[in-house]
Length: 264
Image: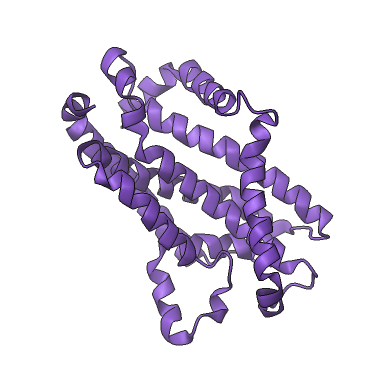
């Protein structure tokens, strides 16, 4: 592990230039450029807020703001957007870079680092846009926002560990690439992002703890919406899970690497 990280450090300029180049290429022929990376999730929030605000806004206790539901939506979207982007990009990471893996010798761990760096850059820009909108809506996050870097790190690590395992498996079983987006859609609606967990009947609410993103998104809500410290028990569990998944992904990748090149 230490050797892999040292090897990646030797390619730091390649990694940084790849992250920035990927960001530029993604929006190179768009008149609004990188702004689309922020506008797309914000438009999604606007649609949900327009449709559901009258139904759910009155059921959001603990915050005295006429735009409470929009603020709640934005906080949950910030967490989900980072997780979903890392999963989706990791899923096709090795397939998309098949020619690179075959023809160029470089530390393979550079690829997930580039994915993590690119997703983190997009998420930081989204965070800045959301904080600006909070100000416009009259909501100023309190000191509990200092928990946010830890929550971002946990979300990123969990998404990357899970995404890399799926990415390796997707090289050998391409059906996984078709199934994962469907599972993500299900997981999105099984996570209290556009609704509050309190509206779920108690008999069914206990099932939410089986969803790892439940603890993460609720922690974002506590920090950004209610100015409360996150429930550390759930966050620590996801953090440990992120470490275990990342180690499993590295072991799986190292074992499958020779066969992967033949399959690409």
